[in-house]
Amino acid sequence: MQISSLSPQDDWNRQHARVLRFLFDHGGIRSMREDYLRLARATEQELQAPGTSLLLATLRGEAGPVLAGASFVAGYGKDAFLIAVHPLYRRKGVGCALLRAQLDRLGSLECRAGLNQVPFLGLCFKAGLIASSLAMASTGRTLLRLEGNAPKTDRRIAAPTKEGERLCRFPS
Image (cartoon, rainbow, N blue to C red; front, side, top):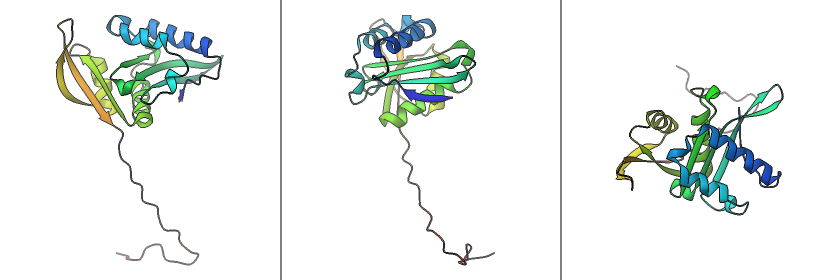
């Protein structure tokens, strides 16, 4: 599986239409109508704004790359948050990989989910988001606010060894 950003240079209108169709077919539009419309109106310049990202998960198929999942985030998830995975590739780590890639790319992420959206909540928890508070939607539904930050990984660089130098200084 390869996760990549939608590049505006690559025939933007055709690629944009393909992602919109994918999200419409596989994303459950009723719960994310405003976010979908925001992506539909997005321009190439808006995708390059800080806190905005559109990532695609593709798999190698017989006829070329196959779109398995897509994720759109605007305003670090506060303004818009969309994620969809093709039904054939659900429960195979595609959605989790997309969310982790969004976290790594943006540094922080926030979204809201209805308490009845159990598969989506499980996906968010598996990707490293944590529940921070409850909110009430304008429709009267109770929403769980999820947020997360990219893990800080300080990797220590091993000192290079010279030829003939002992690797273990304290043998047991």
